[in-house]
Length: 397
Image (cartoon, rainbow, N blue to C red; front, side, top):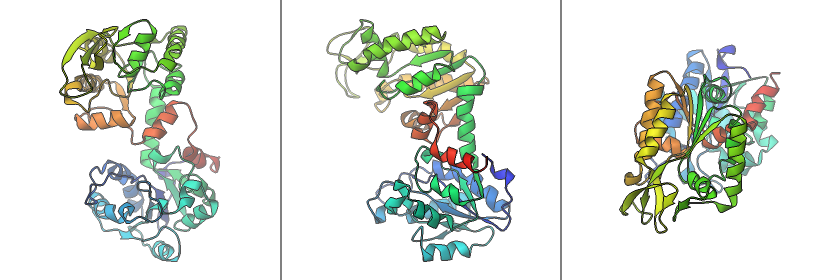
């Protein structure tokens, strides 16, 4: 896979697959422009080196051509981020769109309409990919968030280009994940939280080969505790996966990986921010109570482990952080990781809830890297080959 700086963009048009699937409010205003800003270095590099850019993306999950999913709604925000005016095509393929892209001059930017207005995008239609490829002579993929999807604009389109490369964001994402899974300084710590162990099995099994410590937090922990004979009250538990916890503990022991479970929890008498709360040992939660956050002893333990780690992966919160009264564990963990990062550790945060938490509590700029691609990052951690990355590699081999 080659990078931007290996290609001459002068007087050429690059078609860039970006991930501008950003949230909009009821008035169609962008409420979080992180993904737009993340693509800025790639776009700016091409423009500064004499090229023109055609931007293509999806937005939401439209059923056909739905006005509320039009990329016209994000045009102004892109212009604000780029600090220049851009052109907009009301279609992403066809004569009108090609008329726009064929007349682009160096330094100009064209935004195409939502790719998913065509079912062919998701279906991976080769003819649709060929139509898209007519917009430029160089293909750049900078959409890590869609790299696990074998769609027309992320995989098949690459076949139609002699020159194709990764954008700066895609490259940063790949390097960050590689640093955690392959080249990171030891000791390497993975913190896996969230509600269900069933959604994290393949990640845990894959990263066991590469880590020294594993913290299990959030709702996942209660399945481990119940499997070991503890009383967890009304706490979340996946009984079908209790046997898996024993297998995991055995595998971890064989690989000299230390697994750390919570010691105590903040429990509630119902699932509500205003519920009564008490601190219990995690294996001694009364019948009518449920654990919703990590307790004080647990946080002291986790702080010690985080502070002694040199490479840290964080995927999943420690509690129901959406409720302010049960956010202390997740906030505390964010503080410990921020401090470890300040002291020289490399920290990668990924996965929807973890990313939401670091943004909500102000840790976004205090960790080494926050992944923009939830599903893509998780599949990378599972050891799967991402189709869009493979498409960039094949033709350059």
